[in-house]
Length: 216
Ligand code: AMP
Image (cartoon, rainbow, N blue to C red; front, side):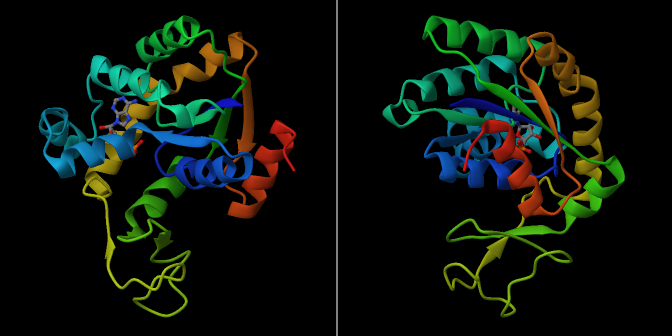
């Protein structure tokens, strides 16, 4: 199964992509994660991407398309994947169509997570993750059961994304509406678009997505 998860920052794409990827035994491909790793490792791509990500702008298309194309060739993608955070604009969507066609692959569905903008700033600015296992938490909606200790792995260090501050979040939302939202029409025209209510609770959103995919 080959899927795209579309939605504004904070819509829950990452969380849902992780859950669905686990359930279907496919991989989650997050360009944001790949870029954050490149920044942390100080690679050439990372050095270029860092200031752009800090502003909340989009990294150049050739960089992300190149990263994704290379990733598609890895053996773990053979069973399928979920694209989380890619494509982000029409040029990337067109490039993706070409990359997939060259590999003789097709997309099955594009899943849109619909959420209200007002909810997003609160969702994003409160989130943090375990530095060891990546489990996601939130100051208001999902604190660790024992304060300061990860529920999943027991680790005691957490981190917040550099771009999860209010000012950058507002730019990221603007960029989403201007650059990424037009992809809804793009995939609707290909009869691939399915929408779910991203304001529902997390388990309910997972259930809605599984129902669309016909997954148990
Ligand atoms: P995300 O983790 O998806 O919220 O992405 C974090 C940041 O990485 C974005 O605000 C962009 O600066 C950059 N980024 C991630 N994916 C892309 C993409 N497909 N195209 C351009 N920039 C991206």
